[in-house]
Image 1 (cartoon, rainbow, N blue to C red):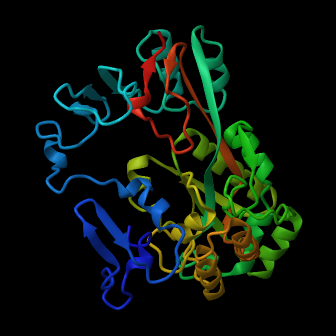
Image 2 (cartoon, one colour):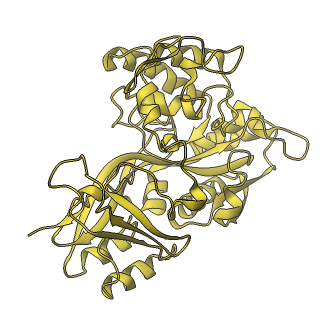
Length: 392
């Protein structure tokens, strides 16, 4: 969270700057930023910024729940289920027609989509969290089920870590190596094979057409022969790249598609697939791997999290003073049209330096039973339980 609140932090002490956070009254806090930063509020809305009461104890949230919402946690069994029940002793301050359900159960069916289909046919749940690939059409065919979909800025990034050492060298510190990897890969093929064409092709700079400051700088260069030549020029023509991914359907499939295209271009690749519990322990430090990145409202917000020098989530090890300067300028511009002019430069730097292979933007799908309201798919996977209900 410190990176998201950077415009409030004293660079010397590493703590909130004097006067940056001002308590106005019992219900008002005023922020006095050290510099203009349009991401400060959306940063507070990002999922790691969830606010709980000072006395909240996650070990006893069932026995001693604290909150102002219309529901209370009744049960929580990791890997099995979670249950919310309406708080009858609490005067809900939201709209009168909200929070109509008495009970909401979240059931964990694991990661096999076949289990989702079986559960739907057996009437074991009323709404999916998400459905991907070929299983979208399978759910479409189920009687009494309705599809909901939304375009998003959710994506997958395949990157070399520029700080990582492999066999005594730092292969991804060489821009020629990074550019070669990107040039060898067709993003359209990754979308087709990795995500069943359910989305739009991206351009290797991690700013989506949905972002207000998106700049269209055209598609990246795809030239496998030139990629092989560039890899040879860098002295790594026979180097074997170990490409790591999580063992999870579309992320595994997309990374497989990247590896296959690299091999077709004459680049040597070893694929390693890890279970989630192992993958997430080291996701930011792997030399060469793929990572899922969630939707966020602003392009500058994404770039600040993932590519600004020294950030905790900068898994690429990318550090570029001109990029950082331009990003600071873009984050100070409230007008999206002005910001877009700077964004074009930021996107170009990322692509010319070959920082990432970022092949597509996902369209997300969810299915629910007919008659369920408030269950539409959300770009950030949010489920607003107070909006769920049954049509009458």
